[in-house]
View 1 (cartoon, rainbow, N blue to C red):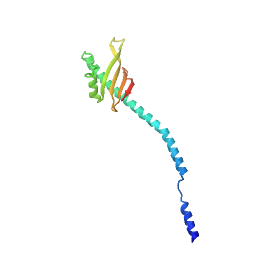
View 2: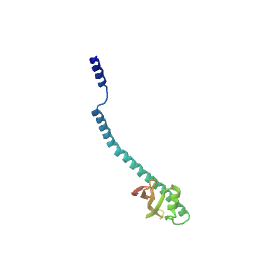
View 3: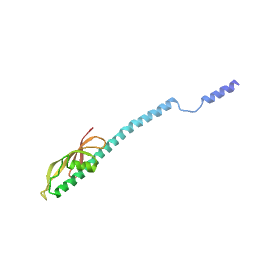
View 4: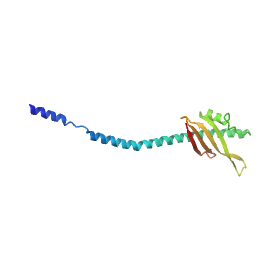
Length: 148
């Protein structure tokens, strides 16, 4: 009888399962994988934000081009003030455009026409950051600053 009881207890103690060492090894492997993956994911998030700012700048630039074309058709000078293109950009893009500065005049040799070669634009992005970018006439965007 006692022998049977010991055999039953031995069978119960021989249950299959994971040891503490095995569990620790799995956790260490998962920690290593997480340490590798997290910086990559954060890099992709930052790249996506940067791309969003560039797209916002392209949208603002489209408004600038439209307003400059209207002003040229009417023989007027474009209004880069808060009441001018900045307000139109806000109405059309839903972004709060703080300022637009047209600079670096460029003279077209064939037509003799003077055009603005680039613009410095400040706006508040959807995520609440104030962005400053330089946009060239050929639609290249360079983000120069980002601040909360």
